[in-house]
Length: 575
Image 1 (cartoon, rainbow, N blue to C red):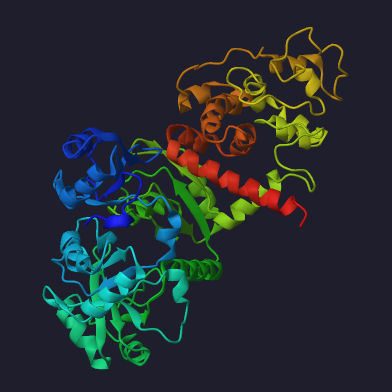
Image 2 (spheres, rainbow, N blue to C red):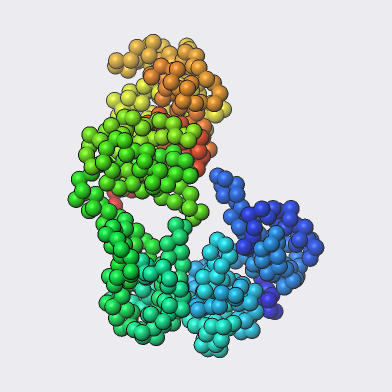
C-alpha cells in the first residue's frame, strides 16, 4: 500500500527484505526495472564473507515508479522466497521512536507476512510488517506492524485485538522496547519451562498451565540439540507465580541422578520467570565462575577446532591426560562447532600435561591452540594496563604535538626505554613500511629519537641525518642497520605457513608474522595499525598464524584491541 497524497516520500528508495541468500543485484534489476527505470541497486553483504545479509535497496529515478513497485511486487516470490518491500526510512528517529508500532501475538502458524499486511492495511499506511520466523520459515506465532501514524495504530488495536485470525484469537497491543519494559522480578507474567516430559505437545502445555490461570499465549520450541523448551504468558502475575510454585522441581518421569550445565537436576521440571538473554547470560556466567572456584580445577581454552567436533569428541581428545570435570563446545545455529571449546581438568599437573601434548597438535587437518582459559574482562584489563597511554598523553600524539600515524604516535608518547623494547627484531622488518613510504600510510611525527629515522618520516637513507644524530645509549650502528631496510633475507616470501616459520630463526619469527600482519591490520585501522600489530605480536605464534588465515578472527582481535586502547584513553583523559 503506497503512501497517500502528501505523505509520499520525496525520494524513490525502497527497502527489499527477506531475500534468498543467492539473490543478486542483477536478479533484482531484472525484476524491478520491469516496473520503471532503476537508478541503482545494492544487496547488502557481510564485510568479511561477502555473503548476502538478506536485504537490499532499490533506487528508482521517479517516486511514481517506486510506488508502483511497492504496490505490485510486495510479497512476490524471488527464488522461492516471498520478499518484503517498504519505503527506505532515512530518518532513524522514526524507526527508533516506536510511535505507531504494534505487537501482534498468538498468531496462527499459517499467517505469513502478506496475510498480516492484508489484515492491518485497512487501518492506515503501513511502513513495515513482519511475522517472526525461525531459519526454516516457521512462524513463532507473533509479529509486528509499524504504522505511519499513531492514530492508525490505535485504531488497529481497538478493532483487531481479540479477533479471530485463522484459527486463533490474536492479541494486539502497543510495542514496547525491551529497555522500556523494566526488570520487575516480582510482578512477571511470562514463564520459561524446560526439562518437561518428552510427550508434552502444545495442547498438553496449554492444558497443564491453564490450571493456574488464564493464558494469553504459549510457545513450544526446540534448540539446535533437539531439546524442548517453552514459554507461557499468563494474563496476570498471580497466575504466573502460582505456576512457578507448583511446577518447578516437579518430577518429569526420568530416572537420572545427573544435572545440566546450570546445575538443575535432569529428572525435575524447570519453571521460572522468563529472563532476557543478557540477564540469563550474566547469571550463568556468575554461576559458572563460582562453580569453577569451588571445584578448584584448571580450565583450558582450545581453539581452531573442526566444525564437526562436539563435547564428547573434545572430551575423548583430552581424557588421556587426566580427570576431566567438564567439557564444553559452543555450537552455532546449525548445530556446528564454532571452532573453540573449554576443557576443565581436576589438577594443575594434568592441565599442564594436556597443554604440552596437545598444543599445535594437528586434529582433522587443523593445528590446535591450547592454553589457559582467561575471562574476557581479565584479558581486556591486562591488555589495557600493558598498552594504555601514560596519564596526560593522548593516543596518537607525539611529545612535540605531531600527528601520530601508525607507530609514530606511539613512539612519540612512550619513554625511551619502551621505544628501545619496541625496536627488537620483531618490529625492525616492519619499520620501513611505517615511515611514510608508499605502503606506510600517514607520515611519522618529529618525536624524540625520530630524526635518525629519516627526517620527515621517509625511509632512512645512509648519509641523510643519521651521522649527525647522537646515538641512543646502548644502541650501536650495527643495531641500527636493520631499520634501514638491510635485514638479512628470510625464507618464504609468499604464504606464511608453520613449516616456513619453524625453519626460521626464533629471533625473526615474530618479524615474519608482523610483516604479514601489519598490511592486513592497516586495511582495518590505518591510523593505529602499528600499535595494534605490536599488541598482536604478544600472542602465541600458532594463534597468530590462525589470524592470518581468518580475516573474521583477525577483525575480532582488532576490535578487541581498539576497545582496550579506547578504555585506556578514556581513563587517562582528565574529567
